Image (cartoon, rainbow, N blue to C red; front, side, top):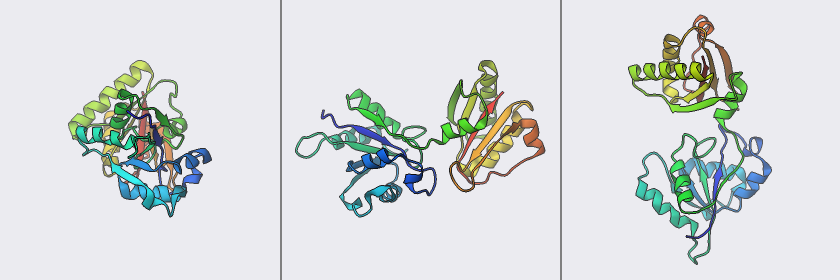
Length: 239
């Protein structure tokens, strides 16, 4: 196997100029990569154009890796690391927003690269999860990311009870996300199930003009309810 590298390339959390949220060194590195594995080609092309490759997008090669990609198709992506002449080639991995391979199907390619001895290089950029934790005022020393909770109502309520119990047992901040159109139903279940003294943070539209990051006890949230709407949102709780 050629020894090309996999660069994990963050992308903005909103419609930003990449230079506002990414270091210059990262933007310079992107300019040297010509092969990309992306979650969605159209948005990746738009991001790379804004990141300094405008006028050169036609020179780039894209392959998609998303929730529908089969294991054998992920395996086939390894061919990208070798040029037609047999020389090693670097590949960039880009998610739809934020950090690739975190709550993202790109993790399958990262795992495969480790199995095959391909160097994985994470680059610096925005993380909605870490930004939310930083701003929450909750325990930043012990925390767990739970990803998406179950979509079905009763299963979700059980999951909320379980993670609240874990939080209380370990004094641990619990972090989770939701599909934007279910934000308000998630919030309703949280306020129904959680204990009044549990602290709950809602972090929506992070780094964007409508950014909202609020931490209150569940008792106060019940007294001062809010509609999150269909915005990218991170939820955090500490019992």
